[in-house]
Amino acid sequence: MGRPFLVCNFKNNLRSLSPMLSDRMTKKKVRTIHEIWADVFIHFSIASHVSKNGYFDITADQLRPFGRPRLLCKIDFAEKVPKVFQDNSLSILAIENGTYRIASTDPFFKIDLKKIESIPVSTRTLPKHLVTLDAAKISGEFQALDAAVASGMMSDFIGEDVLLTVRGRRRSSKFTFHLSSQTKNVTTYEVQGVQIEIDGGYEGKKSLTLIEAKNSVSKTMNIRQILYPQVHFENEVSKSVNSAVLFYDRGSRVFNFIPLSFNGSSVSVDYADTKRYKLIAHKASILSKLKDLNLFQMGKELTVTTIFPQANDFRKVLSVFDKVAEKNSVTREEALEDVPVKVVGRQLNYYTDALAWMGLVEIHDQVVTITELGKAISVLDEDMKLAAFEHIIFSDRLAQEMLKLDASEFSSELLEKYGISKTTPARRQSTMKRWKKFFEEYEMSF
Image 1 (spheres, rainbow, N blue to C red):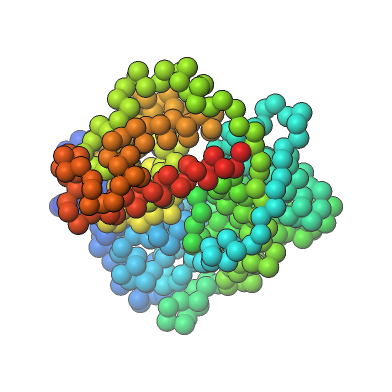
Image 2: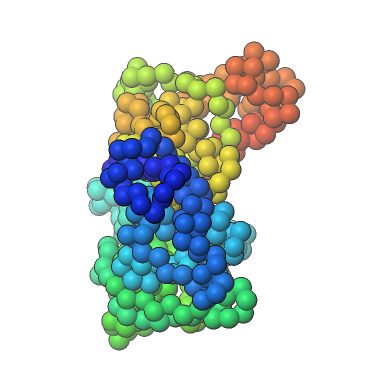
């Protein structure tokens, strides 16, 4: 994933073009996953094969001329299912290393976020003697898991003392599961040697609990993320194996532990045993430290584009920034691959455009590249990073007006500068107010 996702625009004789030949003879063009999968479906007559045989197996080698197989097949959220799959009521799941099954099944399960939010939150703190783990500086999923262990919330959630014994990638054992199709038939998946990844496996005397950690809250998840590790370890160990998802909210510093179970054909959410914890931090002199860094002499601290932010969920903006900062340069879709937003339509651009507005990235030909200012902010501790974001955003004059004035009172000069029509100022104002609420919640969490 180090280089931009470049896909050739195949128009004629697609079957005979090799990746190397097409790369040399045709103009390189970045296209959406939606567009690529539409070509794949036509080329292999996938919908017809599924209708006739019940499923269609496709290999990484077959997909490689169109794009990167891992990116094409990594569909973790229902919100990101490519349009051609939606139109044909199809899904894709890995069954072997490099082989995927397309069938008329729904591999996603839903999480009722309103039920989660109604559950009371208890508070926790980290041990005072820790100097390498700070509640105010947690941004990554592994950091969140480590903080959950150190604060005692992990053992409290699981119900016994546990140790981290499993983390990282491995190949799955052989197992079979079944999913009902849209036509009430059953599709069988015989899985062997598929790569699985465990964010954290915590073992106690009685059980092994597998945790899938997320920095972004999602209403849907792919059962593959839960089912494959769950069944693999059920085949490997004699202890009880349990699974859960951890949604870590960076704004409120709340840890949401949600138990999950698989009954052989579907994943269910256990709201009764869901637990929520808030990690308390100690506020330092963040603003003075930020000022001392003189970051904003490195580049423009206000807008460098005419696209005013439209991404309502600032938590997702942060997740996209983390991805770009990790890779330095990615396509728009790569930037959003771990974030539950739609892959088609204008929303695809909202989150990367918001970063460009802040001067943290530059976007050319659908490729997002981090700026020098973005690099400088990306290496800051979490509290400093968010303070820098807040400073940049609310230094903008129109953003300031949106927090103080009615939409009818906004400066016509600023609205014209951003190309905001008469019908949209209130919506842009709503975005700014949501962002402000995010920062207020973060500051209250100290």
